[in-house]
Length: 297
Ligand SMILES: NC(=O)c1ccc[n+]([C@@H]2O[C@H](COP(=O)([O-])OP(=O)(O)OC[C@H]3O[C@@H](n4cnc5c(N)ncnc54)[C@H](OP(=O)(O)O)[C@@H]3O)[C@@H](O)[C@H]2O)c1
Image (cartoon, rainbow, N blue to C red; front, side, top):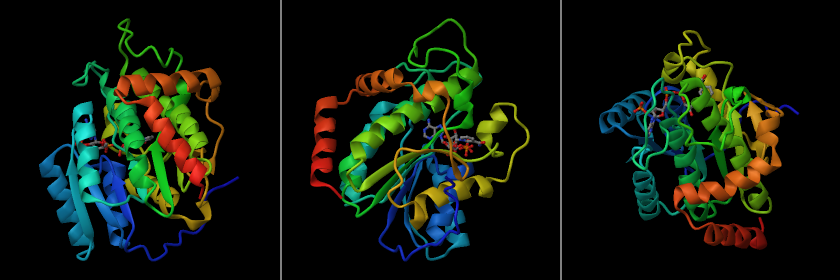
């Protein structure tokens, strides 16, 4: 099945969208385009100066843009959780959550809590934020969560749960592992969301999109950023995709992810471990999800 179709954008003045990592590359383009279409866009970044620059650029492109900003460094779970509290204080619902923030590093760095950086920023921060934002997303008539994965998830041969391995460091392996984890996470969460008003899907945005992430990975070519951004906009806005849940999409097509990403044992173990890594109460959050499911669409 193909998920591409002509983009039709309904009147959306009340719709609130959070784009994480909106200060560069794909996230920045997605945020600016959404603002241009009348969405109320929350621009997330870690660097206040870069956030201001994106706001200025968005207003230049669309003077009537309705922009909000929020700052948090995703290499700290404390900051992620603080940001969640702030989101609840400032907004009464959330319609689209784009888990876009991502990093590629050629050296071994650690997060504030001691996790390898790509794992912490690309996977754990997104997991932590998403699981805490379910009640806010449930206030939307129809909410969409988009997890930025990558075709790179196919190139993982290490145990993806062995996140403390000190044996060797290779940026590519660590990056791809963080992108692999997005997929079983998406699939497990989608099972809980099946009878709710929230959907979750994972996306690879393009062959290679020429951004910081790909530059750091020594890939010096790529399709234009706007082309990568269109794949996110399609998943976020396309009315034909209403209700689509628990899929892995490469550009505009639903694809079968790698056998490892489909492994049921990995999906089950990752789910349990992620709550522990994130320091979140699994029973409490699962109860929230089950109660949403009982109340139905
Ligand atoms: N480009 C591709 O071909 C490709 C392919 C598959 C998947 N993806 C995924 O698409 C997403 C966007 O990547 P991109 O290619 O657009 O790269 P990018 O231009 O480097 O953008 C990454 C964004 O994430 C933010 N970020 C990085 N570390 C952060 C941290 N510690 N806390 C908060 N925000 C942080 C960056 O903030 P700063 O501006 O402060 O650096 C930036 O806004 C990533 O998840 C990436 O893995 C990209």
